[in-house]
Structures are given as structure tokens and as C-alpha cells.
Length: 147
Image 1: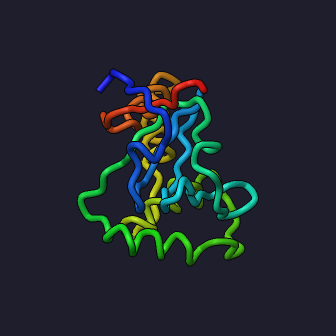
Image 2 (image 1 turned 90 degrees about the horizontal axis):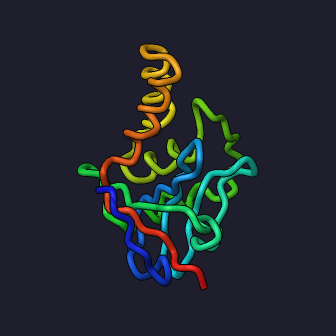
């Protein structure tokens, strides 16, 4: 879907346990919405709880749907269990997408990293761009209205 729907607040579209992807210029950041306008995400400072609107800012975002996901309450429980657990961020092997995938499915994986890496190896910098574009999964995109 190429259209972007403008919303007043993230709570208009997000449900507890949602895996949220946020588009930045050259990468996509991932977080888990846990309700009450709060999300848990993996940063350079570790796994932290933050106001979801501040994570999203003025960027486009979407909800990643997992066919094999745990129930929402289990996803939230898994995310909370990792808060400040001392995990060290690693762009290739332990990033925000790995964290969200693990919370949702039990398997830590980053489609963004490995899709871009393999496409980049096969097709050079053009492949990296294609890998990043394919990371959005065709889901409905949202953006917060300016206040």
C-alpha cells in the first residue's frame, strides 16, 4: 500500500502486543506497543520502555502482522521480561527487529539486515536499496498529524 493515513494519536490504530516498524531515512526501527501509549524497544542503551509517540515522531509507521505470533498478552509479557536485562545491542546480530521478532514469534531474526545484506551482496548498492524497500511488507502506513 502506498498511501499513508494521517492519525491524531498512535492509540487510534495500535493494540497491545503490536510489532511496530518506523521508517527512517536509511533504516527501519522496530518496537512493541504494550498499551497506554507506551512501547518497549531495543536501543544502544539496552531494552527500554518509552512513550510510543516519541519513538515514532513524524515518521511513517506500520504494524507488522505475524501469522505465527503468540497472543498479545504473551508478547507484552515477553517484552517486559527483557526490560533492562543487560542485552547488548549489535546491529547485525541483536538489534531492535531481532528483539521484536523474538517477542512475537520466539525466533530472533532481522529481515531488514539479512534482506539488505544478501540483496546487497547479490546486486551491490542497488540491492541494498531494494532490500530496504521490501522491508515494509506492503502494510498500511500511518503518520501522526502535526499538532
